[in-house]
Length: 244
Ligand code: NAP
Image 1 (cartoon, protein in one colour):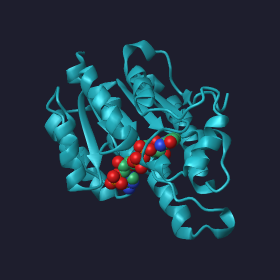
Image 2 (cartoon, helix red, strand yellow):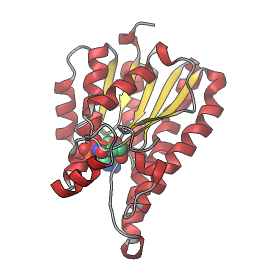
Image 3 (tube, protein in one colour):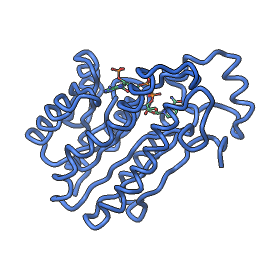
């Protein structure tokens, strides 16, 4: 199957790591669909796609109706989705003592329940096709924990369990399910950190720097390719060695 016949859906693709993943997969030659919560974001995504007739669509990963609408449009317009990159995610940091229900629930809904909602909405079709790849973007915080991020950490640890269970459920249908756990990547999410925090952080990173989004996208590209055909249920840390 030629790459342009493989339709890849990337959630949260209007900025940050998701946008870089979209650009990389477009360069690779896939037909890429990216989603954003806003019309402006969807338009921006459409403009970024240069090599296929892929486009941007509006989708809120916490809203089942919005997910159904987007998935139906993709399936009607492009056919079965070959690859899903569950990338959309948020942080709402606070110490547990001070955390509100809203902060807890919004992070769990956006980062974890979204995996259930988006994946379930398209996996039946993927199973019928007897091929596919699902890649979940986790975080180093889901692997090693971080003070002030119990909600985020729980969501990303949950993602690891979800990935392994789904890998077992879908293996007989030739669908590989893996996760990537990035360390600190230069995006809006890390722009909230002060220079002092970044300096302290980088002191503890063996490679001595935070990463570019492209260093995550290249791993997504690998996990979609035939080169990774025997890898499933795996988590790949992309963290400069901060956790080994
Ligand atoms: P970002 O720059 O803040 O972008 C987040 C993306 O997710 C945006 O496109 C955003 O859309 C989208 N999004 C948020 N809530 C959504 C919702 N309810 N429905 C649909 N889309 C939604 O974040 P990033 O740094 O690129 O992070 C991308 C992924 O990598 C996340 O899962 C994050 O947890 C993970 N990660 C990031 C880092 C890091 O250091 N940056 C490290 C480890 C893991 P809007 O523009 O509409 O808000």
